[in-house]
Length: 311
Image (cartoon, rainbow, N blue to C red; front, side, top):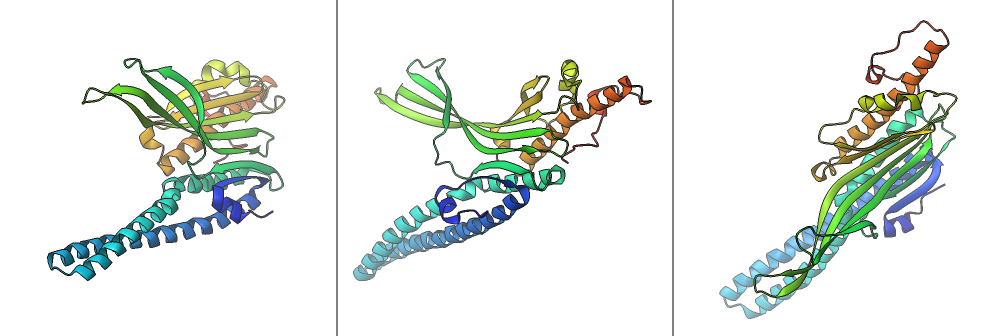
């Protein structure tokens, strides 16, 4: 299997079902596209800067009363500035989201240690914001009755697969945002339609669907599961649901942290470790029930899993 580089260069959306080794090879091919894009961005940046310099010299030619040089420099500066600025903005748009690619590759490399080589992973990675975001809900502004607030979510990463112990995992990253739009009275006294977007942060969702015969006591630990979850400061647990089949943890990161690659990676790693601590604790309790001489820890956080760990 080989990635279609032409189609990817048009959409910047990578979606596949393949073994992790194949996915990492294709991610390396994406690296070349990213590097090519960065070279183009720097080239158009240089054109834009040179065009600005031409405009400066055109102004100097005007002062020195050099009409022909002035016209040539003005035309060169305007045409080059428009072309270079447009192409620079177009080619540099990926730079703002390059952390998505690097983060996803790092997460895949981390998960590789606990995946069977022959098992397939489902991966969907979006490296552009040109796709239409999914609306969540719409509310009326609490103070401005003519203004509505639309909440959106952009699902830019999804990784699904099975660990060596048979546990299925699903990791999803959603970028949250809101757009306020409506009629507002301006300084002149006239009503004007205004629209303003605002980032709401990053939402990470991790679901582990475990084998009931292997981890049979998870549902009985409802009250202690939350104490086992350890995530970085300033992040928030939005949801923690435990059933007889799965554990779902949703964490929200504030906007100023949603573009920090190392912080996102650390949060994802801690989410995996926290949920697997719960699973491994149930194994210890199960062994105690069958009479094995091992004492249970005081809390679930005292257990650091030795089986099925992803880090």
